[in-house]
Length: 74
Figure 1 (cartoon, rainbow, N blue to C red):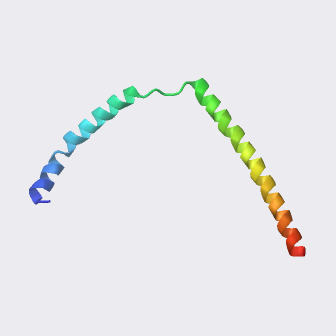
Figure 2: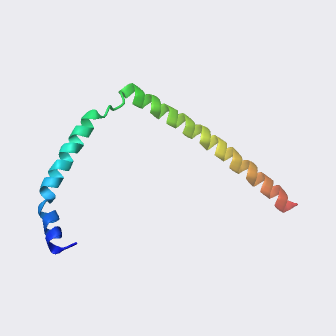
């Protein structure tokens, strides 16, 4: 890049930034956010699956630890 191109891009920055934020505003107007009911429903699903996975992993860890203990005692 030449010095002139660098200087040109620096002087155009405020206009480019303003254009970027105008485009962001337009795009955000297109977004549909979830309702409170949808958010609560999704949260419940995540919490339930987290508990199920914790139980599964805890049981698996316990079972594998018992197997290893039995093999080591031998």
